[in-house]
Length: 526
Ligand code: HEM
Image: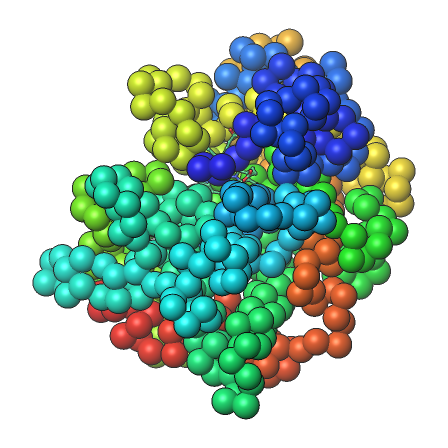
C-alpha cells in the first residue's frame, strides 16, 4: 500500500468489501488476496445498511467540510503527524516487506493485523532478507539519511529518511523505510526520522554487558514499550477525554473483542479506521512556521507535500534540502519537560487545528500521490476531496452511523450521552448545514455518518473526542497494545526508564532522548 488508506477492506466474517460495497469471499478476490487474507478488519458495531448518504449529499457535505475555517486547538501541531505515524503503524501490512521470505500462516496472520509494534519502522527485523536493507551493516542500527546542502546550510547526516537505491531519479528519491506512507508529507517523514534516531540512541545506551545477539531485540522492546507508554499517557489524552481512556485502560473493554485472549491477534475495527481515527484530518493546518527559514506561515501544507517523495518530489532533488529540516521546538512544547531554553516565542509555535467538522481547504484538492490517484484527475474532482473520500469509504463498507453506534454502545453498558438532532445540526463553531436541502439535512440528522458524528461530539466538547468517538479510539488502542508482541497492557508492572521518572514518558521526552537534549539537533536550521 503506497498511500495512506485502503482501497478495499477484508472484514472478518464478511469477506472483501470493495467499491460496490458487496461482501465477496476472499476466495473470489484477486489471486494474491485469495492466497492469504489481506489486512484484517472487523466490524465493532452493527451494519449501516440502507443508512448511507447519497452521492449528491456526500459531495455537498464534503465541500462544506473541506472549505477551511475552524478554530485552533491547544495541542502542539507535532501531535497531528505523530497521529498519522501511529495510524500507519497500526495499519501497516508487514507482508509488503516479507514477500519472498518463507512465511508461516501464523506470521502472516500477525503481519496483517493491527499492532503497535513499530513494524512501520522495523519491517520484519534485521534478520529478514527483505528487511535487512533498512539496517546498518551491524544489524542493530536503523539506516539514516543525509540532506543536501541548501541556503548555506551544509548537508547533514541523520535529518532525512535514507534514500538512494535504484537507478532512476524517482527510485533514488524513494525512502528506504518499510512504509512509504511515512514519506507522504514532510512532517510525518521527520517524525519517522526522529523515531529512527530514538531507536539508534537506545541501542547505544544499552549496557555493554548485553550480548551482541540480544542488543537489537532488547532495544526494540524498550523502544516499543516507551512508544506505547507515550501514546497511552501523552498522545491519547490530548485527543480524547482522559476519563474515557482511563476507563478502558483501567476497567477493560466493553464493546470490542471483549474477552479475547490477550495474545490472540487483534483485528482493526472499520469504525476506527474509516471514521473515528480520521479525526486527524481536522487537525491539519494550512501552513506552519516550519523553521527559521520557512517562517511566518511559509511552511505551507503544499510545501510539506512537495518536500516528501510520496506526496511530492522532494522539490526535484534526490534528497531533502537542508533548509527544510524540522525545528521540533516549533512542533512540541519542551517547557512541558522543564526545558524553557528550548522554547520558541509563542508567535512561532504551531498549534494543531481544533478537532471539529472543518478541514483546511487544501484537503479538497489532495495531491494525487497522497491517495494513489492519477495526476490527470482534475483539481476540483471530488475524488481529490478528503472529506468526500472519507464519507464515501463509509458507504463502501456500510459503516454504522453515529446514532447507531451510540445506541449499540449504550446497550453494551457504555456510559454515554447520545447527541440530539439539534446538536448534530448546530454543532459548535463547525460546519453550517444551511445550504443542504431539507431532505439532505434530514437524512444527515437521522443517519449521521460516523466520522461527522464523532467530529461533532468533539466540537461540542472543547475539541476532544468524547462519548462514541472516545470509546472507539480508546478500545481500539487498548486492544492493539494488548495484542502487540511487546505490550505495556500485558506487562502492567513495566515502567519507563528513559524519561524524567518512572511514570513519565511523553513525546517531548522521546525527542529529548533521541536528539540528546541539544538545540543543535532539535533545530539544526537555527
Ligand atoms: C497531511 C496529512 C494527511 C493526508 C494528506 C491524509 C490523507 C489521507 C487519505 C488520502 C486517506 C485515504 C482516504 C480514502 O480514500 O479512504 C487517508 C486515510 C486515513 N487517514 Fe489520513 N491523511 C493525513 C493525516 C492523517 C492524520 C493526522 C490522521 C490521524 C491522526 C489520519 C488518519 C487516517 C486514517 C485512520 C485513515 C484510514 C486508515 C488507513 O490509513 O488505512 N490521517 N488519509
